[in-house]
Image 1 (cartoon, rainbow, N blue to C red):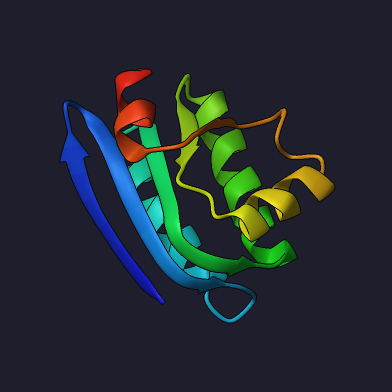
Image 2: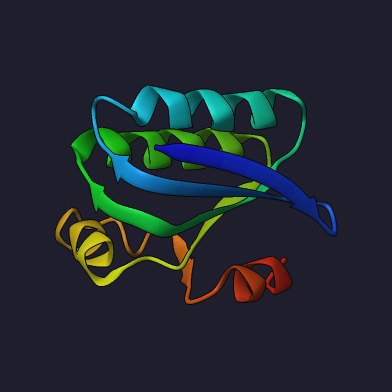
Amino acid sequence: MEITGKSVNGVEVVFVSGRLDAYNSNLVEGKFNEIIDSGKIQIVADLSGVDYISSSGLRVMLASLKKLNKMGGTLKLSGLQQYVLEVFEIAGFTPLFQIYDSQEDAIASF
């Protein structure tokens, strides 16, 4: 699991790679909370490096989205691999998130 971040035009981009499961989801949640608690409320989660996501990973994404929505911000997703996208679809999460093919498209949408 690797989590890196950068700021692009006032948008925080979090790149996640590896498995987003019960073992690693707390690391991702911690990174999102750190960013949100610092007052940054426009976030793109680049999941192009995620090859597996479990219900724990979905929970982190949903909790972060809800927290941001309460603050007037949002979490947009980019680069979902087919398997990960299917998990979001099966869970009924695709209508909740703005999902983009690329990180650049997600950033430009703000």
